[in-house]
Length: 257
Ligand code: 13P
Image: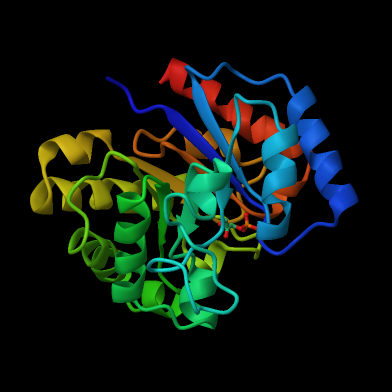
């Protein structure tokens, strides 16, 4: 069975109420391939989750941008994934964890991200888990070592990968306009798949969706989508714009592969 194309929109810390309503109406009006062909998940800032959840067409799903590593309680400013608590209770099925902006700006370690992924999964959330190297790491030839260590820290805590999408997001490509070439993305995705084959199982290697993030746009998405191990995208800046619809449509490219 093929891996269903996945397009995530990470709105990051952007948007006013008015802007959010506009983005949602653009998404609702967009003519996109059916849910059999592409899975679409958008991730607004926490304060807009209920608004987006209640106004977005039901074919699209919603993700939180983070959640706490354990049950809720005295953790000022955090959001609990716990069942009967916040995200699951609101009907938010997805969460993004391990984004490089949190790893680098908020010092989230590989181990901490692994714990968060495991906890979120145990509470019934699906996880978009992000990995990726910095420019220095790429230039020193350690890209694969870095992303393998980030993935291993998740694997140390997680045994069922069915509800995980892995997002390869090279830090040097995020928000820079400097997109990885299709060959660069394919190389890392295929090596990650080999890593799953060698360290987890052939079944997980064959089925896990590995999506690319970093300056994806309406202009470059088709070429990237044509690569065999690119199973979709995690989109930042362009997910706030009408071109996000074009990125969703790039799922059609897989039909011709
Ligand atoms: P940009 O698409 O703005 O480069 O951001 C990518 C990203 O970080 C998605 O999570």
